[in-house]
Image 1 (cartoon, one colour):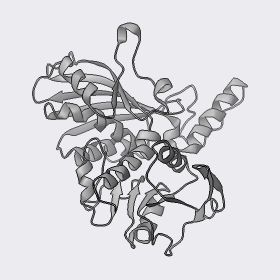
Image 2 (image 1 turned 90 degrees about the horizontal axis):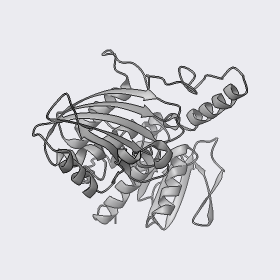
Image 3 (image 1 turned 180 degrees about the vertical axis):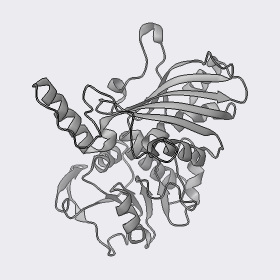
Length: 336
């Protein structure tokens, strides 16, 4: 089993290495690829030093079985045929292929079987905020069709990459020292602030990040349910949080939904408000599961429910989800 990581020096690329090691992924050889700037860097994996190779249009992927890619949409589009032409399965973390009809968009807890139909040998990893939401929605959908979803996200600085977290840390230091904060990566100062703007605004006045949650949820869950989102950047280092309101065809009890949450793989219930126990980024950073809590009936709607969920967007929202797809492919004979 020969696996490649493309974009090895980035935040998600580094998380790929951690997750592959943590899960004792069944690989015999790992090959790292990156830009010309990253080429030559060394990273340790399972006690060995691996050197990053420059990504080029050549036959370097000839013996690769699975390629985990997180180098940005333009790189993914440019190199997709080079990566897949000899039979490698490309599991891509960018937005390049998510809306292509001939590329499955997969969250293993929700729609793993979609991975089997991949005409271009590409599988897309969804947006991080979508991943954690659909993991939480799936056990409810299994009880009754969800007819409407409204969500407000509270997204960590590192969702914008390593530069995002660096800017938040630098701004916090500058403010503490009485200096004018440097603003570059985000539209405004993020430290001591929140910004209701992630990605570009579209003609309907939703941002692209907000519409991603609508488009991707429909594709992953095979549903016509609309999702209305407001996505907000908050001064948190790591892990996204979401407040979710939904409506179902049949009226469900809180007890039914809690039981479904507790039985569902990939979810951890942390819901004891009387003892101040609920999910927060402080607790969830570095964890595999999506954490849910604050589960209650929506007092405005008898068929409505509302809850809070938190997930590590670099781990489950990116690297772990991709590795879980690869594990499913191997377990189900899709990779020999």
